[in-house]
Image 1 (cartoon, rainbow, N blue to C red):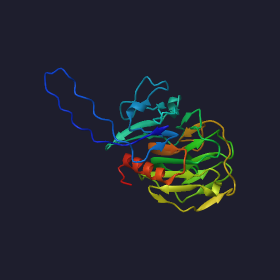
Image 2: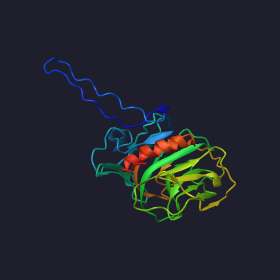
Image 3: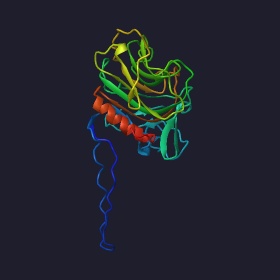
Image 4: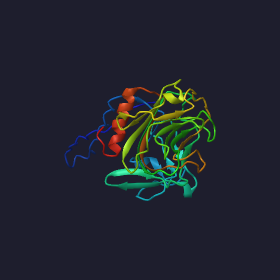
Length: 271
């Protein structure tokens, strides 16, 4: 789906008192500077997309509310859910920022499809996050496919560093940064080997510090996409503030830069 993201300054509309006419609605915000083809878009600052039940009848309204459903704003319908109350992240808001917070024990959210992506996609996964703790070598931010399968795609943090993980190989990009709001971007092109995965912190590409299974190419096309853990299991949970994520089916650098700027605004960064 083609979608423009962004913010606009609403014009003030004036009308004469007593004429019975309602003031016109504000104009729509201008398009984002670059038109994006999205696979999925999650934005906890939009309370209209967060619900305390999986069918979307009880809105999230206040700091501390559990989140059972986070709707996909891309229009593709890849809504993330968690039916187990013990495993639901919590909505938080402070200082003008909004995020989901996970407990780093068993919180996760899932959608049954893999965001429309093939097993060997061009893909950019960008997330505005704060890693609150790193306990396990691999802690999942977004996992595509069936938990336990090899040749899968996973954007990870943890004591093993920022990394692409494939369950039978990896590409690592230095130590995970803790307790800092940032935009993390995992990017790869179709046909790229495990060693061909790339990674950015904010707008700076990071040097790959190690890899395993370097010449393999991901092929697993099984369905499912999962946030914050290894699928619907409790393995490899991440302890995060999650301010938002945009996934695009492309490795175009112009789109990556546009998304970085957008998500930076979710944590008060000018990028």
